[in-house]
Length: 410
Image (cartoon, rainbow, N blue to C red; front, top):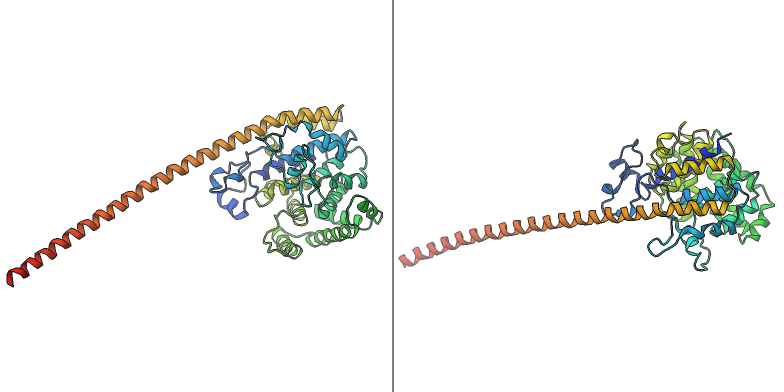
């Protein structure tokens, strides 16, 4: 059985590894970084996409929300109400619209904003929801009920595949497995056969037929990628997701729960080591995919190595939190979370300030380059004008002399 803190530690390390490459293509990453680079600063490689920059070695909202879910779950307080209540100290402001939470996905942006305004639930897919559902289920003292997981997932989004993926990941929580893909396939098959789940879906506002179709699709996808290498799995997943979405999908690392969970598990199965760095270098939706890969690697018995966690920003505090979670000595979950979020706020401000400095420096550099180009263009233009002027003057003299000679003989 895995040490509990190794699981959350691996999610956090995977999150930080993937965050720096989030939104970049695999080809662009390969052209600018080596496979063994850990937490590189990507600003020089972003060119006109500086908005994609994220502070190296700093985990995001995926880890922050997973810690909250684990803390609430360890004290049997995991529920949609308790989770919402725990975000009170996130300090949402105009400067930081999502408070201390760094780079939340679309679902959690709306969820955090809804603290101050009643907003309708979105129907967007979310890869963060199944990750935090896993964290909640993993730290729950005893088997968490499927009713609780469905209620929890539906409090974030009405998207059926996201709710089903949360069920699947919560079911494999705590299971050691030789193959992550096989464990996912077995779980989706098991849930597909649980007919008593269907009235629970209905009570939560989820169409049971759509849930059954989603679980069936997860089962089909996981079964088809068992034992595949990355290239084979990506080809299959790209074609499959293209059919599902009616879009031309060419890579498996898109923001899609079917594809991303499967490819993260394939990468984890293909490496007898902590594979989140490999997942991070695949680009795309790499924050969540590398987090998932870290999770699956840990379930297989290959948690995050010290080399990844030791370089993490705020490592000391995170180690302390993991130790307290592992020991079960957290007495007041809400107070603990409030202190945790208060500690996170300055980190988010610092990342924001560093982003402003880096982009300002880059804009200054661009302006300087532009000025140099303009100066060079002006010099070349002047040279061209002067050259033509000399040619014209010579031509004029020649014509004048010829005309003068003609006049002499007339």
